[in-house]
Amino acid sequence: MTSPLLAVSGLTKRYSSGGKIIAAADDVSFHIEHGETLALAGPSGSGKSTIARLILRLIEADAGRIEFEGSDFLSLNGAALRDRRAHLQMVFQDPLAALNPRATVARVLDDPLRIHHIASRAERPRRIVALLERVGLSAGLAGRAIHEISGGQRQRVAIARAIATKPSLVVLDEAVSALDVSVRAQILRLLLDLQREERIAYLFISHDLGVVRAIAHRIAILDGGRIAESGDARTVIDAPQSAIGKALVAAAPKLSRIERDAS
Amino acid sequence: MTALASIRNLTVTYRREGAEVAALRHISFDVAAGERLAIIGESGSGKSTLALAIAGLLPATAKIGGAIEWQMTEFRSSHAKDRQSFLVLNSLPLRGRDIGFVFQDPSASLDPVMPIGKQIAEVARTHLGLDWRHAYARAKILLERVRLPDPDAALRAFPHQLSGGQKQRVAIAAAIAAGPKLLIADEATSALDTIVQAEIVGLIRRLVSEDGMTLLFISHDIGLAAELAERIAVFRHGELLELGATAQVISAPRHAYTRALLDANLGLDAEPLLQRT
Image (tube, rainbow over all chains, first blue to last red; front, top):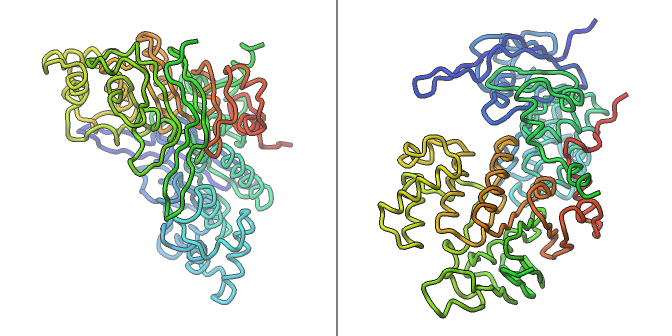
């Protein structure tokens, strides 16, 4: 039996706010297999983004263990951490905030290839074109500045940047939440294609259960920093057991309700 | 059906980097008095320009053609000359008093250094001519109506002490403080999580019904709009593609683009994209 790609156990992070101690992540445990999508869902303040940041080691945990690609990720430091981070990438909600708006698309994609020694200087322009094509953008976009291209194109560039280092896990933090619905559908299809072809696993963070149900294998629903329930995405969403799961499902708009009323 | 506003051949053009860009092209439809009408569209559809045009909030640099005719007889007015239909485009008397506007980001529409009670009371004072004491009393009632916990404490609170959902409740209280006939909500729930979004939609529905307001609900989310609106208008690239009763637009859309929007809408009952073996 092979070990999972990512195994998180007992992950805890506390903040003090107005004299009170708040557990943003409270004894959180889950795992993700190679090529699998696990959704973390929950309302604002439930701990979704804190967990993402802990896994990326953008903030340090108070307690718990993260095993990534078979090694103790929280104990890695220096060059070993840098090397392993190439396999763990992130795409944020707002690419205009995540990427330098004045940099060209080529520059944004050149950085990871250079920093992680993935391609030589001579080889990199060709790799950039290949990355652009991989995410459905034309090579002609390479010379454009980030602020000049559309929101959907920007998020494709952010995805291209994330996959440049051949990651095994990409954390998608509300990565499609700010997109128009038709662009969102295209980006979700792109993510599914990349997953199928390159066996990338996703930690898909979203408050939108409709999107989660459409693309995730499994789901963990968070409430107040704890996992309230978890399981097969469609099973959990179609019949939630926890109070927060039921509240999230009840709050989601359902078109069939209107179609039924009309008929 | 009595029209509250008749939009006739409305065209709005912005100047951008020397070129003229049409944000709305030859739009004509009626907003019925007392209805809940959703304006649906994606980025660049012109839906926010339409909301601003109806509210008289377009920037001075925008070029406006056509007309918005108001049935003004129902509006309370201190000036007799207001009691007739006229072009709202060149005048501003309705804004704030007869039209309430709720924006997407309540942090941007509330003053960060003014207690929220004062922000609401100020609307009532300005438009209803109340003194401060009565304006504050009205503000407290409004905070109760938008279901803010502990309205007395909330009167003295600053926006940063509230959650995003609570701030939007305050923004709604301020928007309805002068008893407007028309409430315009422009992506008012888009920045909120699903649960808070459903609460705010419920709140808007209740307030509109209690006060007999007309609602213009601007959204990119056709699924959400369908839950609230009686009619839906679909916009794309500055054009009105179709307008009809919600059930008809949802179950028998006339335009291919509406069909595409419905297909791209991932509700809990949508077909999953992930093919599993």
